[in-house]
Image 1 (cartoon, rainbow, N blue to C red):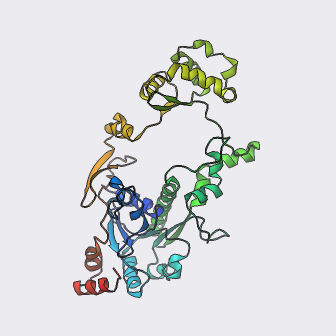
Image 2 (tube, one colour; image 1 turned 90 degrees about the vertical axis):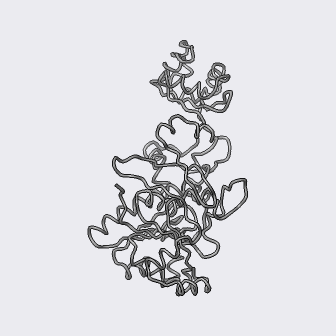
Amino acid sequence: MTFLNDITVLELSEHISASACTKMMVALGADVIKIEPPNKGERSRYMGPFPNDEPHPEKSGLFLYLNMGKKGITLDITQKEGRDIFLKLVKQADIIVEDLGHGVLDQLDLGYGALSRVHPSLVFTMITPFGENGPYAHYQAEDIVVEAVSGMMLQQGSPDREPIKMGGHIIYYRAGASAFFGSLAALYHAENMGEGQKVEVSIQETLLHDDFITIEAALARGEDIRRRLAPMLLPCSDGWFYIRAFPHEWPRLTKALGMPELENDERFIDMKKRSENAEELNAIIMSKLCDMKKSEIYDLMQKNRVTTGFLADVEDLFLSEQYKAHHYFLEIEHPVAGKLAYPGAFATMGDIKWVHGRAPLLGEHNDEIICGWLGYGQEDMMQLKQKGIV
């Protein structure tokens, strides 16, 4: 069974957050209609990565991943006929998710106020860097900006170097996850009360919410948010490994190293002491492990019940016996990009099945949605194309 198989979602996205939100919805069975500008499509089609570093709007790895299983149409909602078509789609939708930017839809008279008059039980989810109100609401931002002003970057990087941003686009996926859960809560309310909801996700607030412990430390103990050097992130023969060794694991670590005499060494007796004597500790660990492979270190330490990890590269991920045991990676054929591997479900839920499909070509489902759902004829479609509406 699927969870959202009778739910229709309209997506208006120019980046990652809204697409990440609706990616989870389509995986749970929702009909997600992705609406893109005619001719060029949305921005993530041009962000890559691309096979052989050759840009192509149908081969962006980012776009293909974010839009698995969705239906795609093109529609210029800045023109009256495009807005009319959009409003007809809204009447058939349960949820709208957008990340176009602060006030963009309001300027087109397509914001929540206008749409709720057309569809009173509509769930309208908007994702912006700073939210709809406040002095930052109209400010422009990208991921490094929001990470900085949320305080997150104060915790990242070496304490004797400048702060750094997280790799990739993780903050947008976190915002997408928040929008997903907020949308489902609002949908539950709408279905039970017949009353629509506006769901507002501020990426800045999402980041602070996800790591509020740093604020609590300041309030409770007067500690500043600060970066700390991880004492045991070290190189080995084929990469990097990390050993945490919580206080109760310290005797196990000394045993695994064949150095039981370190168990009561005053320099390493607790986490604070280990941090103060990090260079000495690193030298000791390296003398025993640096010539081993990361997988060997991982297995050795885990067998001794010591919290340890290694830094996996892409090859490690695809060869991982753990991922294979869960049948995690999927091969999906795309008419332009070809057959590629994609991540699968991030959770299992009994009889609830995840839906996996390929990303749509630009405007691939125009006829199915605009003609089939809304009743437009082929002559209408020809005129809409000539005017640049679809």
